[in-house]
Length: 384
Image (cartoon, rainbow, N blue to C red):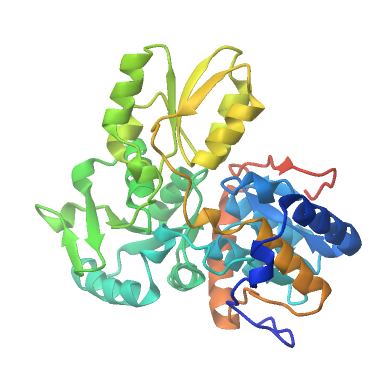
């Protein structure tokens, strides 16, 4: 486990940072970045606020950014603009001398929180009673380190929204059934695309500890954990119908964390990187309604003024937990680094990290070609 003297976790932002002028904060962040130079690496997830993304050295999805952190051996401090599970993955993949910091420990993921290791241990016992040794666990990277470790320990692997189809195919080459967690919608949409019928999928309710399924459980090939993204689940069939009624020429582009019904009605569905690439390659004057997080949609609107882009849900708000990290927290974090007073270090224990890395490695070994290589480099630095 990575350790540093004088670590203080989950500290509250000091009051003085809340009253600072934005221009002053931006100036101080820039100065500290210049002072620390290559010893500092700031990866930023696509869903983060513009006020902090402007200081990211690269933006991408969670696994891309963790891999960039892993390959950046010169960085002593990795300040992750994202959420807790992303920083955990970065800590797992980086070396013991590197320090991963999350500027605000409240920055979590509601989906990842919908599957904890105690629930999974109980569920696994019941599933083995029902299906015996026929199940392989797969977890979306949007999960805790403990869930990733469980999958690594039991022969499974992690998946991303970019390679879920390939990894599900691999899982079925190992066992006749798959447990997919924590996002039921990505699991359902991926399995359906592979030709698995909806009646061959059962949902596991971790609160009630029961299968949600009518019929013979022996027919089940995919067990879906009852979890979801609180942002993507808010895009509805009515949203699709309304936007098409308003403009029949519009293209509907959604993330596969949306419900099965919404994905089926859309024109295109894919990962965050797929969404970005699709818009970049789209012809001028084309029209798009996008079903994903609002910060990214707004950024795409500003980056592509030659195209008509809007949110599929006009009442959508940005992800609340993704938006925890703001400019005051970033400045506070950097001030603490300069003062050798580290707050909010993310450190995964050695055993958990070891098994979680097995799950990640199984995925990377099988799907490096299918993982998106493109990362938006916000500065002139190149880390790939």
